[in-house]
Amino acid sequence: NSATSSDPNECSATAIRTDYPNDLPPLDCNGGMGIDITFTVTDACDNTNDCVANISMDDSTDPYFSNCPLDMTVNVDVDLCESNVVYSQPIALDNCDEAVEVSLVEGIPSGNAFPLGTTLIIFEAGDACGNTSTCSFEITVIDSDIPSIGCPSNDVYVCTDEGDCEWEATAVTS
Image (cartoon, rainbow, N blue to C red; front, top):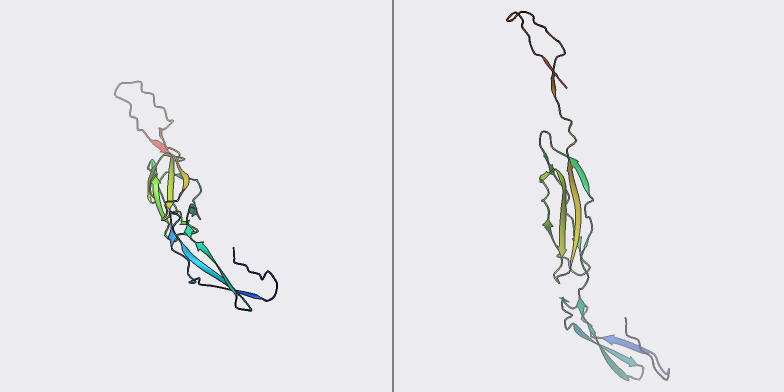
């Protein structure tokens, strides 16, 4: 919105000036007082009229995540029933507040061991006015390692006399 003026008799041009300090009022989370700006209109004959407007900044908009990770599926680490998973920490932005705090509120931090199964990860972003939003994703750890087995040989030895037979076991692994 801006101030407008006119001369009702259309006798002369008008000009508007303001005492606006060229600075926005401080962010106030509770609909603060703001600052009063006086607008003064003057015509060619130096007739004037004033009006006052109040400008305040109130933040009621939630922050938003610019890079919430997607769900991911990973395999277990070799010879373990878990996996060390590294994921990107989400970044949050806000239309009014540059200092948005992002914190892990549920799940396992990046770079730690995740057990078999699905783990829900939830991050929360909060601005100075208490507005919040969440980012959530799942990390699923699966065990797709094929187990190995050692089988005895297929050689068959038959002994007819007690104590007269020797047998060696050999195993093949895959």
